[in-house]
Image (cartoon, rainbow, N blue to C red; front, side, top):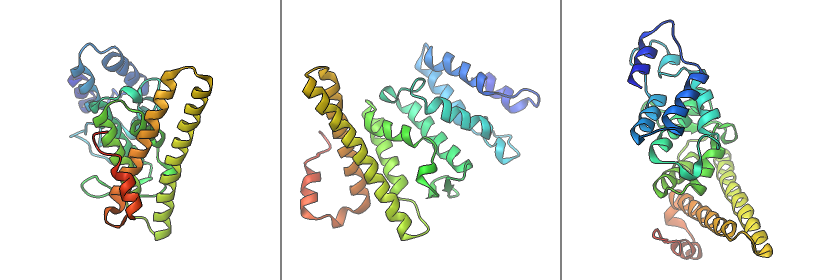
Length: 241
């Protein structure tokens, strides 16, 4: 990967295209022999170009290529399985999520690169993947990190008006409800057919993860002003469950 980095940084005539990155993904991720290969590849995708002179060349991948890599690889279930995502893959996904949506104008960042505002949640690239990771990923550390990131997208941003803030909160709750209803329907069908017990088990886990996501949202939103009944209900979802 260092050889490729050197070419990208120093060559004026050779540039990477999407097919090149696809082939590297196959070699260093899909067919990787050692974990270090995958880690170095993910680092490469988000590494800054120290010799950059323009905004577009701030990273080793230009803006067009970063958008393609993020939407066609990182957000593609066939290439990046959300169920088995490890920490290095998630950190790469998260960095590209922020970078791509910032360049598309959907996010505004502060000087430290932290998300400051979200112009339109519906326009964010990669949101469906982020929802899947936060609910379906089998890596508990990744799932917890994604849960917090997802909630913060709706809570720790600065909308232009109170109505926009409320709209963002409502959108989050409705999205959680949609996930819950789908999982409940799937569980009901599997129970009625008395087949595919694994499907029922997965549905139960999805329901539980949705509730944990809602718990994270509420805790980060307003811990001190919950009504007693809701506090009691959330307390039953203890961290060790």
